[in-house]
Each structure stands twice: as structure tokens, then as C-alpha cells.
Length: 147
Image (cartoon, rainbow, N blue to C red):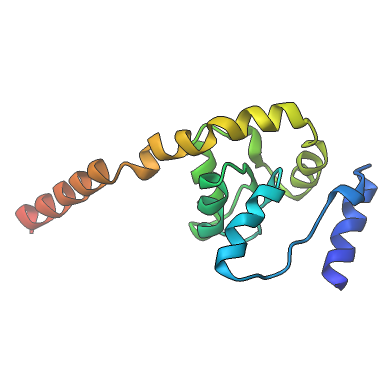
């Protein structure tokens, strides 16, 4: 509870109506996916990103605000967002993250993003398993030939 209160205070400092922020509790998998219908925008964790929950969010049509990272693990959210062309949901640093999170209040804009998000994700290179498999196979073949 202490963590939630600290986060709420940070948003409050930025002028966000904290009554609009809801922290969802752990639930069973069947209920968990339905929780995405209650979310306007997901806030990714840092320094290590959610990755799985980021993809779940996107598949359920929920954009994810992420922060740029400093190593491979912490850059996953940034990479996902860049691949989807969602650069506006990438914060440069902690202060930018708080600022962007406090500005994500345009329901119409979020609604427009959500409508096309699932298709955008499924049509992206991130889900092009045939191309990924071929590229990986080519890499392995080249390594075998080389060594």
C-alpha cells in the first residue's frame, strides 16, 4: 500500500486527478485478461520492463507507456514501442515518464489508438514468425558455413 500511495502522490504533484488511477489486484487468469477492458493506458515498470504484460496489453488494445533503458533487458519496452511506431509512449527519463503519464488523458486519442492497436501489433514485424524463422535459419546456416 505504501508504494501505491507514493505513486499517487507523484501523479498528484503533476496535477493528475488521482481518482482516475486504479491499481488492479492480482486475479485469476480468466479475470486477468478482462481487466484490460478497464485500462486506458498501461504504465510499464522500470528499470526492467514487463515484456509479456506489454504484449498482453497491446493484444488487448491497451497502449503502454515505457521508459528508455540502459541495457538489453531495460530496453525491451522501448524496442516494442518503436517497432509499433508508438514513439510518443516512450519516455526519455524518469521525469519525462511522470510528465507523459500525467498527460495521457485525451480519451478520444486513446480510443483511436486502441481501435487499431491489436491489428497493428499482429501485422508488425514483432509477430511475423515466418520472417523471423527464415532470418534465424539463415543466420544459423551462415554460421555453420563459416565455422
